[in-house]
Length: 374
Image (cartoon, rainbow, N blue to C red; front, side, top):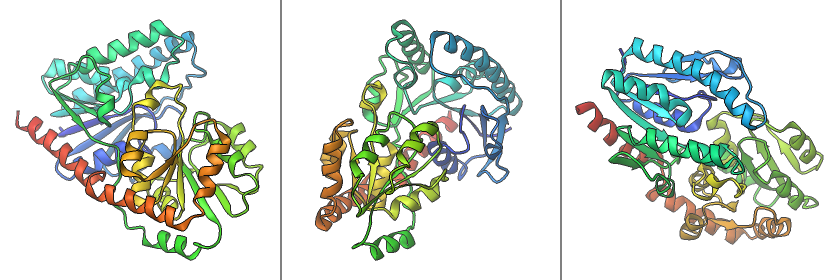
C-alpha cells in the first residue's frame, strides 16, 4: 500500500510538471507513478526515476487527428484504463493524482469503489488543446465530459486562474498551482553568458520541435543576423520542419535535453522564445512554463502568449505569431544591453516574489494535508 499514486499517460518520465509534483509529494508521502509508454521508448523505462515507476509498455500511434482516429484511440485507452484500475486496486493508495482527462476515468472509478480521495490535475483542457474546433460535436462533448468528471474529484488543480474559469462545473475545492520552476543554481551557465556578452547573442527555444510554435518564423527573422544564434532543444515531432530551419547557418539544434539540462541551456541564453498558435483555444488561456523559466533565469522572453502577465511583470517583448518583421524587430532590439538587463531583472524579481515552485509546493502540501486528514 502506498499513500499516493500519480497517473499520467504519455511522456510521464520526461514531463516537468509530473516531476515537480511527484518530487514534492515524495518528501512527505510514499508515491508510485503509473504511466503509458506509448512509443515503446526504452528511455522511458528509467531505473533511476525519483520514485517507484510502473509503465504500461504497449506501443501504439494515434496518427493524424480525424473522427475515425479518435474512436481508434478510445479502444487503446480502455486497455490502459483497465491496467491502471488493476494497479490501483493492488496498491490501494489513499489519494490518486490524475494528470489530465485521459488518466482521470480509472482514477474516478477507483475513488468511487473504494471511497478514496481523487486529485484532478487539469494541466490542459483536453478538447481545447487536442481536438480541432472544426469537430464541433466531439469538441463540445469532450469538454462537457471533462467538466462532469472533474466535478466529482475532491480537488481540481489548474495551472493558471484563467484556466479554472473555463470550468462551468467544478468541485468545491479548486487550487491554482502554476507550472513554474525551482530556483536552480545556474551560476556556471550565467558566467558563460557573461563572457560572451559582447559577442553572439543567443536566443533559445526548448520544447517540442513541431508546428504551432512559430519556429519557422523565428528562424526566418534571424536569417542574416550574424550576431545572433537561434538554438533549439527538444523532442523532434516534425522532422521536416527541423531540417528546413537548420539550413540557416545561425540555427543550431542541441537534441533532446532533460529538464535540468534544458534550464542550464536557457540560463546561458540572452533571451528565450515562447510562441504559440492562438488558433488552438488552449493557448489563449494558459500561462506557458517557458515564461516562468525565463523569469527564473533572469532573461527576457519574446512571446505572443500571456500578454497580461508579460505586461504586468515587464519581463519580455510581445509580438504577433506570424509577423516575421515584428519578430525580427524584437530580436534586434535585444542588442540593447540595458533593455535585456531591465527585462531580465524584472522577471527575476517577480520569480523570487511569487512565481517559484517553493510557493507552489506550499499550496500542494496544504491540499494533501487536508486530504490525508479526512
